[in-house]
Image 1 (spheres, rainbow, N blue to C red):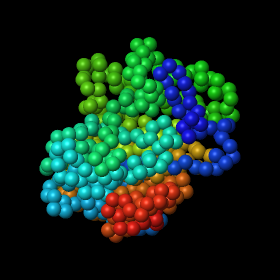
Image 2: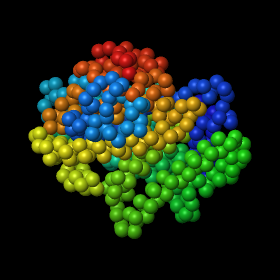
Image 3: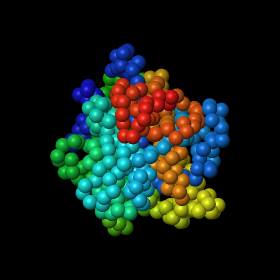
Image 4: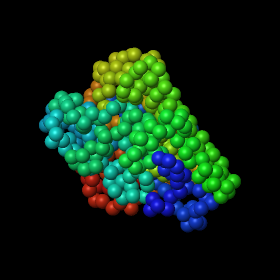
Length: 433
């Protein structure tokens, strides 16, 4: 399937391009492609400011969700979902580790801080097994935190649980990339063994990755219709814009002798923006159709001084109903939603035939914990965004009353022709989504 795609090629470069109407058959133009993304935020939310008052389509967005007004008709707010396997179930403390490990697997994580970790296959990898061969990357795993794969991170649970939400199988988590440069190179650089040498050559030549495909791009430009020419130009501008942001960050770090590029970003806000932009480009170019993104690992105690929250996030989550702490949690939650909203609007601004990229996406956003003070895993804060290439309802707020989240996962899989009767701890197939 991937060999039918259009690429720009150059030294050490293999840039996938968006679908062009010029080269598509009438049949291809009429068949939308569904993309899948799973975005994880840590430590639960302030539920008082999360859920709208009314259910149905006639709802008013809550304080936390208010930034989503422009895409309100393309999201679903789903209250009442539960991950029973994230509760202790006899295993004692460790809710942050279990929240992450269970989020996309629906399985109870084995309590161990050794090499004998065990959870379950995650829904993104079930999707990847079905559609991953159609794209350059079978799946893309992102994070704003450097992944940890060993050690004790939460009450006897391995760090592998807390820093990963994607699991290839029960014993192999797929560690996410947190360095935007490495993600950029995976997406747009060569997939050969010489990738590092090729990247270093470009750096020494002080050239953009686009400089190596200009001849190919000019040749293609002359073959395209007017609408596709605009699409190509906009795409090239987007690639160069994110490349420049990464270069500027690297230049700053070199100037001030800051080691471990992007392991401790000087500006979380810009790091988060870059990762969302890379995810958008990955979907725009069909480099991958399956992605996960950990905004911050569960249990993260990151402060947010740029929104006037200098307390650690995890410390605040143990709010004990203190109104001042709850208000600060809402600030953090709203900040996360604001960035997510920018991502959704990027998708919604990109046209695909008669639809948008958001129309042709299935995106789950949420946390494996509801209220951080209680460490509960029922009534999870979950958004289901996009129209799933025609498979999803949208523009509504529903309460599903203690429904296993894995039932919804089964519904998504079945609507996309992956017919399973069981996933994780599912008790049935929920298709009213």
